[in-house]
Length: 319
Image (cartoon, rainbow, N blue to C red):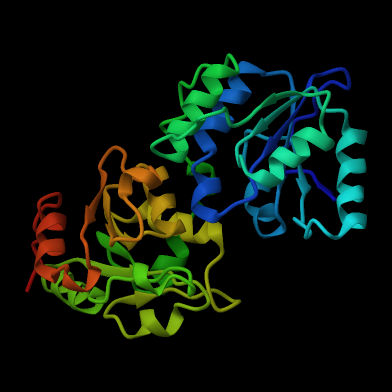
């Protein structure tokens, strides 16, 4: 299945064809922006095609660094008919180069059986980068691509103008965006004191805004501030990015929207427990930092509040 991005160029039929592979997840695919930008700069006349999964089709259709999208349903390996159909589609494309940004056993199978004739850039023997972005930097250098933007992903192209949405919700500027949720399968990533933090920030003159995902709506409604909801019950990715872009500060768990805020060059904080390290995720850049603790339940509101206020001016209308 092929999708043409809305901003697609029309490369020459004789142009080199490059396949970029990144199946997900949300935060990880957002962080590929810098690598995609560098590949485009190195091969400005090539046709770049992204192989991704269906949940990210609409998101990446807006990405200015790719021309087309192919969908990989990642069928179980025992579903030979589905694998054969993917093999046929990839071989028909006749890609000249492949940048495997996913670097899994599955994509290595694609290299060995589906794309043997393409120049392949992927994981190297002994590869153990400190973060995915560090891995992209090393990978691009091995492929002769200067990683000038790799460490500075910038997804400003994601952000819609949400001024009308904010006005209709009665949001005052400056506001702080909170991201109190995360994927339901990772409850250990959720810091439990966002309601107290929100109350403390409101008392200091800041408005509070949240844009929850579908399984976070009830959580956010229990927190003081504005819970922004769209026609489908929640904001889409582009509205979410617009809300984060307009915030004066962002505080969130280790989850995709926090990575979006970091890749929008926002000042902010991500809160990490023992599940992984901030360095491993590559989330810290510019004025976006992290607090890491052994137990999120033991991270006090005052500690987080102090870290925020050190970076923000006091508000005149504070209580």
